[in-house]
Structure formats: structure tokens, C-alpha cells
Length: 108
Image (cartoon, rainbow, N blue to C red; front, side, top):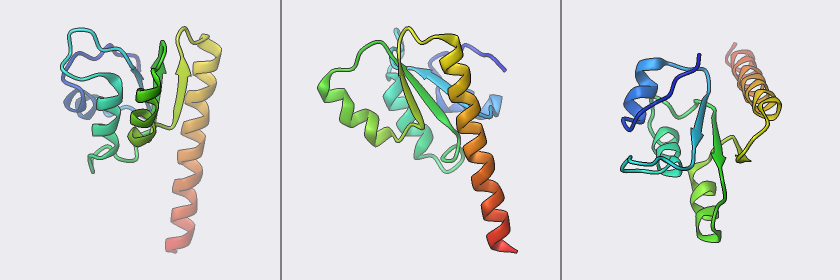
């Protein structure tokens, strides 16, 4: 699924129910940037296990700690080659699948 989300962030993600979210660091015209949205998604019980990939044109040193606290699964510079982004999506989905399988095995 491909979707250009607006400024409603978490609500739009909940409505779409994606397998992975790719968020741009820059969110012109929105009240929060991509790091803030990533942080809210990661710390919302409804989306806490959703894989998040963050695209950033450039991050200032003060943004690096914010990105770390947002706990994104992957971060890529912009422009990001489509092949790299596709690889990252496949990787985070495979990791989540492995984690789910391991959790199923432990609970049995």
C-alpha cells in the first residue's frame, strides 16, 4: 500500500493499518515533524510494534538524540534509492515475522 499521509499522523496510520510506515523527517505545514510522529507511533500501544522507517534529508546533531528516542527501525538519508528503501521494508517485515514466530513458539 502506498499512501501520502497528511498531518493527522497516528490517526491516519490507525485507519490505514499498514504493515510498515515510511515517514519523512520533514513534514511541511504539519504541527510535528517525522521524528515526533515516529515517537508518538512507537509509544502508542496500538502502533508500538509497527515497523518505522525514517527518511531524513539531513539531521542536525541535536536531532540525532531525538531520532534515537523515537526508536525507528531504520533511518535513511534523502534521497534514498528505491532499491535501498525496498530492501529496508523487506528487512523490517522479515524481522517482525521472525519475532512473531519466536513469540508463538515460546508461548506454546
